[in-house]
Length: 497
Image 1 (cartoon, rainbow, N blue to C red):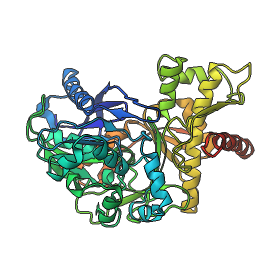
Image 2 (image 1 turned 90 degrees about the vertical axis):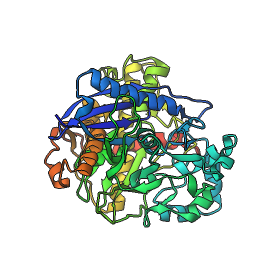
Image 3 (image 1 turned 45 degrees about the vertical axis):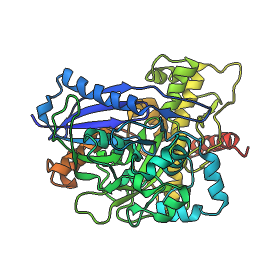
Image 4 (image 1 turned 180 degrees about the vertical axis):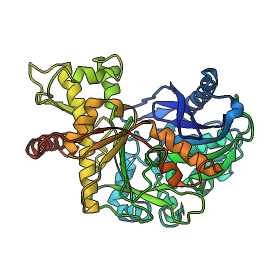
């Protein structure tokens, strides 16, 4: 048996999965790791915890009998994007905790750049807005806040990167310092046209080019394992993509206009725009979706994301204790026909697209004596769907046409009530695939292409299968009234309110 091993390094945990050459997911294991909150609005990860979770996952795959080490023909990596870290080039030892994509500590710096009038230049070159979400301001903060980091950077002893680069460095025994083009496009430092680090942006964010990884395609032989406990040396790492781009690839979103929404810690919607870089007038981002071997011009995408989606369910579980496990929210929310006027805007780490308000804060409103935990659970699911409607409506304005049916994936896509709410509020059919772990599937597809398991994307398109569709059942009038109530609640959550 020959298999592909996928490492899906996410915000709250790492999944290691195995797929065979027919595109069947044989199984997966997940290990969570601690979230670190030093101050309000700050989020960190210990990179050693991340690496340990990867090693645990690899060992567990073998213990479960999903495959043997000798079965693995290649490895694919997909990862939480924008999370930034520094490490020693020679040893791989982290210099500090990683700053997570959710972290808002660089808000003031980004606002200062905005006041200088450089946002249009940044957006033109990177497709991104000036926001602490992206990696560039995090790299700057780490270099300034980590004792001796800037001096060591000048001597060549410091490596910087997003999580994919860190894992690739570790998996190859320090031989490779590289990032794929999809992850590089999320840093605010890569020029979307040249696909290289932009000198003016490096100067703007005060990030030395020498600490950054080489930018490589998303598929091909990118490195080989060396000295990793439990893995043979010489296995090619042949696919890398940021988690959201990987999910679009795993959804077989190969055609221009294809779109997906991943329900994870946040919710993220990507639409394939082909080889055209599309400028958004509606608060969306332009990003690289992927670059395959032999492609001089990558595939681009429009993207919009809500920072908090599944994380809102975790908040109900961990901070409020109204559910014992995340899947419990569906049965609790189903106890009531609606939220009875309760609104929950989960701006727990600010608002993302299309609002881009890093100082917005979460609110719960509309409470009455009759409101209970079921109504709050229902309001949470409704908020998860309504945030996506805001993004998709903005996307439709940019495209000048209605969306097609929306493909969904991620852990919360298994929630039937949430999927029906999404279909109702969006007014579009929702399509859930047979394999909802499409982030993992995308990493496997990219890796398999990189070593020739599949010839091209046409072969991969035959692997993807739909499982369930959710038609929209809500009338135009009720939908319009519901969206207006949501708009008023979001406005109350904004920092200008």
